[in-house]
Image (cartoon, rainbow, N blue to C red; front, side, top):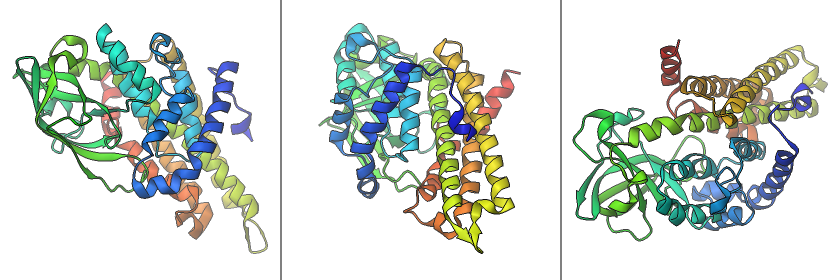
Length: 384
């Protein structure tokens, strides 16, 4: 099949070895636990330590802190293998690909020395608290406040839809540190939340999909965090820091989108070859053949777009418009392809024991988080 024959131009032998390691690790440590993780709405805390011991955390972080010293391409390989393994529970993308880079890029030397080694070993799990109940995608409307009191910030506010909220040890909080309007008053503050007074993990959120993924509400009531934990040491830089890192976040969503579409197509082809109706395989029916041909075309087109943008990002040339393009187009394709593949399964496609059913439910949020696809189109339009 053309999808199997195609090789991304950014792949190398080193990345092939990483793929083998990732596939083996996930098959042994993640796949057997998927059902239990879905029931408990979180991966096991020790799983993070196992991933760290396997060298799979912080693949693109500097070696001086224990990281892999790789690029986004290394992270992409691991994210792809997660999708191929139907693992949507372990949110390493938030930990390694998104939040760790806030620390690595903007942290002071002291902050990086203090936090990154534990992030890479799995001793500290990362989360970022952006979204609030009343703000959604409008980060400039954040209401959580951090008021300086001596050597501490006193933080009050609430956040929602926070990934890794159950297991996180380090939490990057988007908070307002001044009365400057809009984006100007925002800062990023890192809270070491284990046994921290005033920090509360709220209810576990019940979602349409991603049942094994750790998502909760968080609240801060007179929570004191040292001023030394202000990321980068300068107030008012939070919005700029967020905007600079969002392209990598959006590209990571696109990686999962394309890999999930590829996995769905392979599942549907295998099912169509094995399932009989009216005395012949489903793949012998013209409609099935045409649907799968269209899904292969859509998926390959999304793959080639993604590969081009991964190449740009590895070279440091990916801009906000390009990342927005990747995010909205590939997630639209993901949802379209998985929906059509599920139809081939008939009633079995609606049964949760089939991966295609879980993939269908998991896919829908891809068009929402990381900035809705409507906002992505607006960002692209501004660059025209």
